[in-house]
Amino acid sequence: MATDITLNLQRHHVTIAEAMRIIISFDGEGRPIVAFRHGTNYVRGLSGEVLLKRALAPGQKERRKLPTDERRALLAELLADARRMIERIETEAPPAARDWFERIRRWDVERLEAERERFHAIYKPVSILPPDQYRALVLQATEGCSWNRCHFCTFYRDRAFRIHSPPSFREHIHRVKEFVGAGLGLRMAIFLGDANALIIPQPRLRELLRVVHDEFAIGPDADFKGIYAFLDIFGAERKTLAEYRELAAFGVRRIYLGLESGDETVFRLLNKPGSPAEAIEAVRTIKAAGIAVGVILLVGAGGERLAAEHVQHSLAALAAMPLGPEDIVYLSPLIVPPDSPYLAQLQAHASPPLTEIAISAQLEELKRGTRAVIGTGAKVVIYHIEEFVY
Image (cartoon, rainbow, N blue to C red; front, side, top):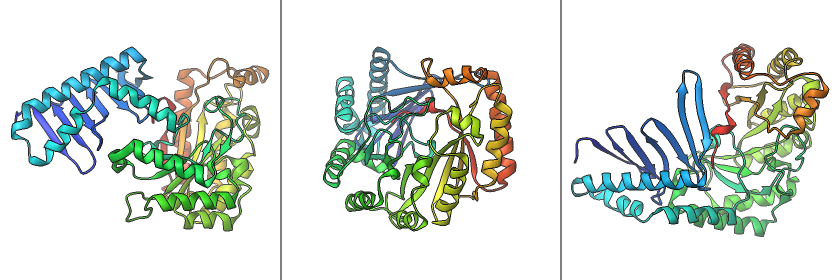
């Protein structure tokens, strides 16, 4: 084979690289999924959106979704790069590569772009996932958010909250499986969407989880290792220890809760349901049931005047939680749209938003403080919501 072309064949994906300047990976259907091209990284989601990530300077990154013209141009370049590399190595490539090459050649820009319409006929927008679940298979047992009034969040404002019936959920799953196709091999877990799917009353949730188990093998030795989901605090406090134990028996491995802040004033300013104290109690109950947690803190919440209280009381809340090696604390720099009611709340509290420099400083303070209060327990991970595309 050409000495500057590298081919890496895996069970569920293939990667082709040219002199490490161009690297493109494809899923089992032959769709491009990630690429590195001349110093810039790209991620193409199932939705057809393409995320660009590149370093601008030490400590500075550009993260953005490509607009239509730029996305189409990039896809054309990636497919042309792939075909050119394949042509150079095809005659000498191992037999196992030939089928991969045919799958890749089936795609052109128009077909890739048509996937966007197919995706939106199956899914409501998948607005956000925790970073450890970016490669999960999302199944929307619910659509939207049952609270949908947090001042800082606009992810679900475009849709009403809805819980699927077992028949409609099964139909959704069948359409997902058909759409993802051989790309399912890259999906290692099930993420039960949307914003707080575990708010579903337990009898209905039990039915929906049975549908999931009808459709997928789930367990330590299966392709899908477990089920994961968000849960808001006002939903968390409604479930009993016995109900969480039942969820654990269904394969629920980790539940993600948006604490956002351990400070009562900041918490109210964000218009979060529940309270920091209820979040602590919910985490204790979930952990007692044998389920891990992911606790999310917003870096910069509360603005300048409340910054010290936000840090101090958030660390105190984490210290009160029995976090262990299977748990994750996510530190997420707060990004607020200009028209967000949160900004009006900050103004009412005479607490201007933190500058980027101040947010970076608080991130480091929370990182150090979190590691101090949890010791060698939970992982501490930075959560940039701009780096997500599904």
